[in-house]
Length: 198
Image 1 (cartoon, helix red, strand yellow):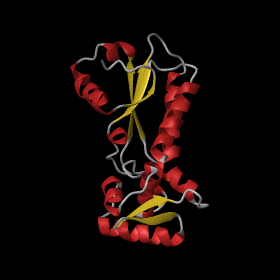
Image 2 (tube, rainbow, N blue to C red):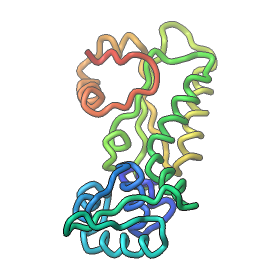
Image 3 (cartoon, one colour):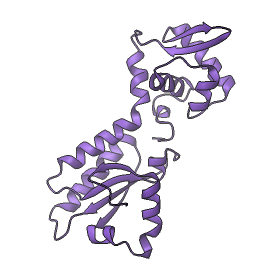
Image 4 (tube, rainbow, N blue to C red):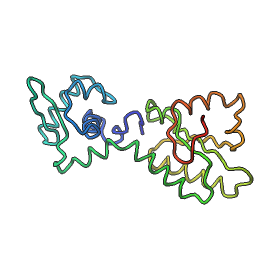
């Protein structure tokens, strides 16, 4: 799945990102407004998509003065699909949190980082996860990580790249982790625990 635009998993057309933008906005938007927020598409393409969606009744077009604005018709029977499209990334984070919270042996901290967190990867990008392991021997730990990898693959079609870091190395990262720590400080989406980023 392309986490920069998860709607591609459902439709290659601009209808997906246009509906996702309108569902997330919850307010009327001009064509230009939609084009600025949408993950892809030219203003001309988005204008055409909006016109088609107005014809289908899932988008309402209204004149405000001399400007036409568009909003999701939340009474339309397909409106819930648009809301789902708008929330695909958040649904993935929810699933990852639920999986990690279900573990008998919970990490001290876990997050998504890299292109998945930034939203600038593509359908071939790995989903990078940092899992900070509690101190001591952790029997069953590898099995939990395998379940997490399987969940990422089943939910997105992408591979999970897991950085499994002992808590001591997270608290006192060596020079080899300098880039990782900087990336996490900048982009991380926390999944469990309190970030020790400082």
